[in-house]
Each structure stands twice: as C-alpha cells, then as structure tokens.
Length: 77
Ligand SMILES: [Zn+2]
View 1: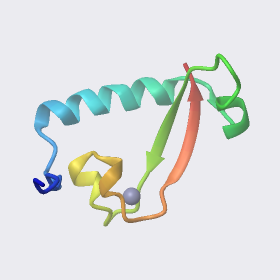
View 2: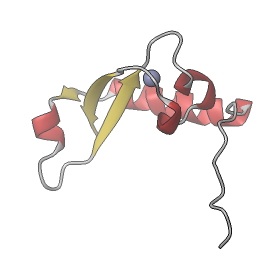
View 3: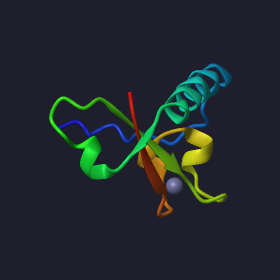
C-alpha cells in the first residue's frame, strides 16, 4: 500500500494572499451575525478567523495549520 501523501505546510503565494485578502474585506463589509443565525437553513455566511500573532495559519492561509484558538466571527452574505 502506498503511503498517504503528507500535506506539508507551505507559505501562501502573493496571489493567494491577494485573493484571501479581498474575500476577507468583502466578508467584513457584510453584517455580523451570531453562530446560531449562520447555521439557519438557507443562510449563506462567511466565517472570519482571527488568529494569534504567532499562529502558522497566518503564513500558510490554511485553517489546517492553525495552532491557536482563533476568534471566529460570522457575517451574512
Ligand atoms: Zn490560528
């Protein structure tokens, strides 16, 4: 059996940062809602993760690399 490829953390490219930054700005421009509201059927919502300064997810832009306890805010689309 082949070994399952291990996904190595990598730094996000400039392009990826630009796209993520644009999405983040868009999400934050929308009204903030509670988790309960975000989970309602038919609701389209953004989850904005606020990481600690040292968190690796800030470099990789992947939530899978998160090692902190991020603050999570929800915004309706
Ligand atoms: Zn984190």
